[in-house]
Image (cartoon, rainbow, N blue to C red; front, side, top):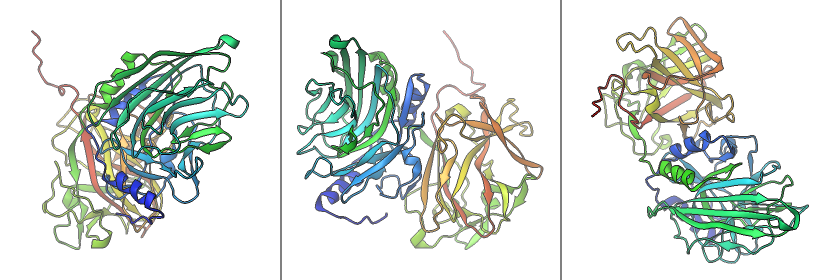
Length: 523
């Protein structure tokens, strides 16, 4: 665990909450799939990226991937005023991360949060969807979750979601006073919240119809339709139609950042349409699905040896366009640098299953383009559509991008892998860093990475061991029903003597329909 310097008693309290508050049974990967499938999705902030330390630890180590707009190009930047900084910690489930803002009660402009790097024009039909956790109740000033205000028409407020000093959800559109739509929230409970806005612009008779929904995920409460067609009317009864920045975890107030929120924010999605109650209920149902299960995990045990060939563990390394074999090694790390988290082998073949103090490393491999680490050892094969996430830990000497690769039995010839096809992740319409994952150059710390398979994009990888290894350049769609016969990591370049350590390679699976060949009796 990284030791964070405490700068005030207040900051200690915030970090203690961030580290110890529990996660709930949820499946953020499924909520994201629903979000990405909606054609009106404009902006999507997931605060995902490589994180240092186990999944339950908050850290102020930052990375550009945390700030990506996973749908559009309206990325975020951090804002910090006076002492303190933003943090990134555990999200609503073990496969997600959350952004943790800081609120200093001595002044409404003191704290830390995020805002968009540029302006955006919001449409007159709008839905704002959030997953968040109040870490404490605001005391002297409201804490804003999503909000904007333009300097040209300041009376046309777009305060889409906030938590007031009574600890209640609130919003404010235009000049009317803010309206609350919940009882006092439970601190450290995760909530799913949606607000929708439908503007009819007509001068003095302008009106905005507002609906608000929420559910307590921690307490497993049903979806509450808290504001039902609540209507504000008048010349300024709307949010601005002028381009403006948006505050996340704070309010973008005309030309400055104000009113930060002491909350953990897992997801923020902004849509250019008004969601129906049925759509919102469908999203909540997806979020409440069971977590995908660990189907495979390789911990690269050392077998109490200083090092041994990775081939003894069923993992191989090939490089260059000719896919030449490289002798990668499983080595024992120094105790003080090991990635400290309880992990156990699942579905792999460690011969010393009590040891997790090993990792795959390529130190002596030649400087060359195109490297792949891969294995065939998962004998309990699953269909590609079942794979929900891939996780792994890295400690690379230099920054890299890596791409998850899978080999699929596209022809249904289980006994013959010669006609299988390799695919690898690559960003085409996604923000770069969504499918191709960024590896920090950091020889001293382990970083954990999660690939969300629901939003990943793919290309064909032309790979035959000792023949060819060449990544594709055009987008391809892997067949969902094809079984996975091999998998691993591809990265574009490696430099001789530059360590590339990999550990805890994990596949997360959910069975969504009977596998190929299953007989179904219909009565």
